[in-house]
Amino acid sequence: MTWNRTVNDTAEATITIAKARAPECCGLLGDVEPYIHELSIYRDADLVWQGPIKRVIESRDTWRIEAKDVTEYLDRTINTTQLRYVNVGDPVKPSGPIQGIAESIIKINVNDPTLSFPPDWCNILPFMVRNDSTVRARFEKDGNSDAGIWIVPVLKIMNTELVPRGLEYTTVGRRLVLGRPQLAADRAQATLTLDHIAGDVQVIKDGASGTAVMWATNQTKDDISDAAWGLSGYLSTPYGRLDSLVLSQAENMDGYDLLQLAQASFIGRYPVPIGLSIPTGSTLTADAPVTMAQLVAGARLNVVTTPGMCSNVTIAFRLTDVDVEWGDSGEQVAISLVPLGQDPPPPTQ
Image (cartoon, rainbow, N blue to C red; front, top):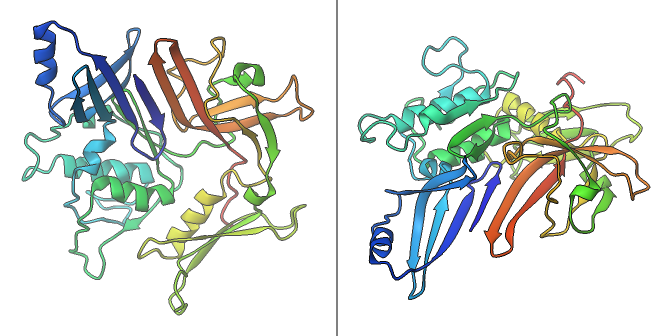
């Protein structure tokens, strides 16, 4: 069995079952249907993963079941609503935290009475959790007509339009968490030392990943007449002029949208980040002081580099992936971390 948690993507799980000779068990497996049935994984009594079965493969000796987390439902649901979240006082679609905009788009589409039978057929609305940003966002994606509808999967809207504006989503069990990138002011879920990570590690100060000012622009073509831009960062730093540039491929992004993109892209880039290189396959030791409930993709973890390293620092990390494998040798839990960095500066700096 393998399963994972990830941020801003759809997590996966697989189980391989040896076929028994008991006909009643074989018959039950034969009734498994993709998207009608779900795979649920428990760790002791705790539900740690759940989502729709996507593929079933039977061989002479085994059954293999492949599943996706509940965001798969949003990837198979086509948007049918106008995307105009621009006015603070709009009673139906107000501008506001990007997490609230994401929740609204999901609710409207999953509850669409003309297409969804029954409404919320996938049973995700009661399990949505929000951790809102403090920034009020506005979002519009209607082309040349306010009546236009963007005919794409709901998950594509989240990935291409809302994530660049500060949304961060993940799943825990059945819960769909609509959150935000962790900041330096946020509490760490746990503090690890290098002794809690099996395998060799490297402490890296990577100047290529650092920046003092992050620019964002929609200037991706030779025609620069309609270009807009936004920036976030600090002036008069010890680094001097250390600029970075992110190009937006999204359509209809104005200066306000690009400012949000610059602020989101700046996180973790100043000062020059100190990172840990953890070899592929490195796992947490059994005595690591962190529970599975704390290993939520996107959460903050601190790592102390001593003992054993000359760099005596405590590094704040963002947990991006959790990969779990269970087999004949027991359970192995691997994690992927990226530096958290400092909080983004106000837009006026």
